[in-house]
Each structure stands twice: as structure tokens, then as C-alpha cells.
Image (cartoon, rainbow, N blue to C red; front, side, top):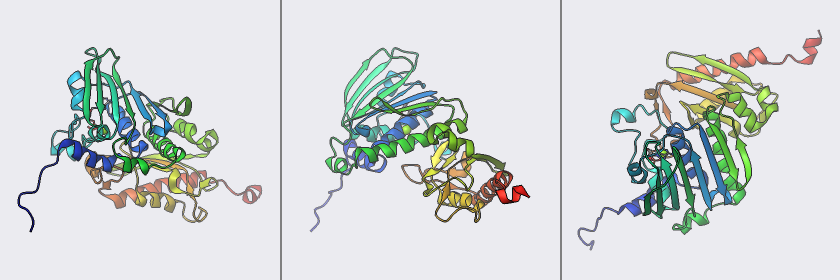
Length: 341
Ligand code: ADP
Ligand code: MG
């Protein structure tokens, strides 16, 4: 027989570890959460330093708004956020974060040292070991935040065992930072692994320049720009012509209101714009920016916020296809045979 009254509410340490299972999959997921926080804090310079692809340490330094001494520990509480306070806000998200879960989750599966200052007061140092606060002190620091996450998954060996090779983990993080840099051309990013610089952007605001930093000047020069708008959305971006394609869709980046997201439907609309000009199995290198009232997009579909629901999607897809088609037509190179006539 089932004993009576056996249900208990779990303690915070346990529930944070469970939540960590959803958002902290690998080093790249931590980099994503930390960099998104730096972006939300209005930073203009963000540096990411890794050791052992982030399994040993991930350090993110920003020059954003920083935190007060009290907020510096409050930030690690579950469901603690400065970004939304009611359900009106929830349906009009303008920041990358809003769930107030990332820092609590990350702190529960690693060791953290953070310095932060809001520029008003001296600055604060916080240390957390596996979710346990071990230091909370004044410390001299300039405005901004510097957070180091080390010994990732030291207390969740099953997750640690699941990590792939250094090269694979590093690949995921490089890909992520590339997309974040494309989404925020006004921010200067620097990603390094030990002393090796893997990506550096100028923060000039020019997306084509970021494309060049990532894919090289030769590719960026070949990309054509497109733009269009309807009653609800504005789209713009850059795309390679059929002469320069890739065998995977990983080179297609979609940015909705400054957030890198994934959408098969939008990828299809882009491929559709090429009609039959794309060789089978090939995709362009592209970046597309979609802007619209945050009310039209729902990012609260999954904790990772990588998928979104969009209202009036049919109209948006048509707009994307048409804008790219126009750009292709305008820029398609006339075959040599015809040129000679
Ligand atoms: P969320 O981003 O969903 O609010 P997080 O757990 O990622 O939740 O962060 C909690 C809070 O900590 C944020 O709402 C923000 O106020 C603060 N914070 C985190 N990182 C930074 C940072 N780099 N600069 C300034 N504030 C930060
Ligand atoms: Mg966050």
C-alpha cells in the first residue's frame, strides 16, 4: 500500500539542478546566457574567454550597467529578474532574458566568481560553489560585470560524461558567438580560447562587416542586400547568390528583434526565393533581420528561447520571399554567352 503524505516540495538546490538540465546543456549554453545578460545590460564591449572549450572556465567580461551589492546575490536566486514584473511585460518582451533562471541554474552546477559594479558604489565580489554562497564582499571594480564559471558540471558527473570533444564543444560556442555578433553589430565582441582569438568584431554597427569577420571578406563582398516591409514587419539582410552556396543550412542566420532564433518555415521562404536556381541540397549563406512589435512574437515557447511563435506568419513568409527575389533578380549575373551577344 502507498504510504500517506509522501509529497514534498523540493529544496532550491535540487530544483535549480533540474532547471539546469533544460538550459545548461553544454559550455555554449552557458556562454549564451552570460552574453545575453551582458547584452541586456547595454554593454558595448563583451569579451569571452575559454579554457578547455569552457569545461574548465568560461569568463565573460562586459562594460554594461552592472549590479548593486544586493542585486549581485539576488541575481542568483531562482525566478529573480529585473526584466519583467507582470504578465503585460511577458507578452511584450524586449530583452533577451526574462525567465530569471539562468544564473541560478548555472550556479547550481559550477563554481562562480563574479565582480560587478553599477558605477554608483564601490563594487562587489560574489563567490558561489555548487549553488552555495561562499563570499559576498565589497571589491573595487569599474562599471560592468566580470563573471567566471569554472569546473562546469563538477557535481553532476552524468552531464559531464556526456560532453563531446574539446573541438566539438568549441565549435558550438564559436557558432553561437558568431550569431550573437551578427545579431548585435554595434557591440564589439571578442572570443578567445586560451590566448587564441577566435572571433573579434569592431562594434561599428555594420552587419556586413561582421559577416566579413566571420566568413571572410570574399564571402561578404559577394552577398547582396535586401529589404522590405509590410503592415506588421520589416525585413532586411544579406544573402549570397546561387554561385556561392553551402551544403548545410547552418550558414543561414535568422534574427528576430535582436534575438537569434531558428525557424524552418523562414528558411524555406528564403530557399523558395531562389526558385530552381539553387543546386539541390545547397543553401545560401544568409542573415535575415525581422523586426516587428514584440507583441506579435512569443518567445516563451521553450526555456532555451530558440524557437518562437509569430503572428501573421504567412504574410511574413511572403514578404521575405518577395524581398529576396527582388534582390536576386537585380543582382543575378547574366551568363557570359548572353553578355557577348
Ligand atoms: P534573466 O536574464 O532572465 O533576468 P538571469 O538569471 O540570467 O535571468 O539574470 C538575473 C538578473 O541578474 C538579471 O535580470 C539582471 O538584472 C542581472 N544580471 C545578470 N547578468 C548581468 C550582467 N552581466 N550585467 C548586469 N546585470 C546582470
Ligand atoms: Mg539571463
